[in-house]
Image (cartoon, rainbow, N blue to C red; front, side):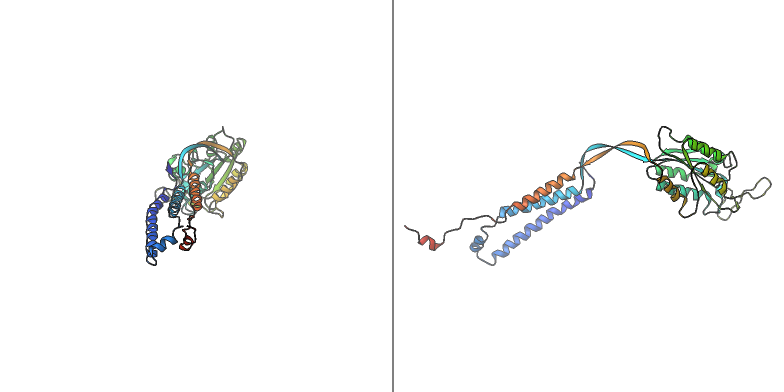
Length: 347
């Protein structure tokens, strides 16, 4: 036997103390009564009192209280197998980790803000599988579809530009890689969410989004940054010693959010575009979009659970209380004949 709320069992320790206090108070009452009258008179007055019944009644009360305490502790034994169905969508998140995502036009920087949006989105997902694609000049799956959001967030925190040596922003490759991460054996809705500054330097992301739609995939985009040119800090330069990246001509490399491209991708992918930092947040908006999609069963698993048995103890406690109430407080006694009645009887 196990208990779901074993802390309640500690109240059982109070029952012996309560029983001792009750016994002492009853004995004290009997002693006090003897002081106000003769023992013979007291005996006649108490002749009809059901002392054994009173003791049994108190005993049943204590048994009932003990059974209620055990019931509150949720006793469990035996097990049952339950099939749990999870309904949701398959969501592949594509995160841009190119150097331009280090720009600080949104605080603390584009990449960190993107991670916060993704983490917030994961917290709002209900039953959806989530996977992560990292991309810059190339793309790869950082972790496959999973329901384990805690582990997914830990992998997300480790993402940084140095994980891909080839720099650039290949959004089309990210879409193609994300498509490969879906489980085609399940009929659940498939969604790609791309977080980037939108400055695509390779391929044709709009055509990739159209190809995704042909595969039954919706494509959403989230823009990081502003419409103003922003210098890109060199990786590893912080705390007032920031150095900015320069091109081969020695000019400072500038980056800005390309919303037009991201809107075109979202339109081609039959999704929507959201800008990070808005109200509601991009994570809130995407979570709302996902909640409106048709949900199908995407995962079934067997769960073995302990069987709750508190009902047995509650029923036993009720029986004990009813039995206690059925015990009479007084019993019938034969009346002793008086002296006058004895004298009037014939010899």
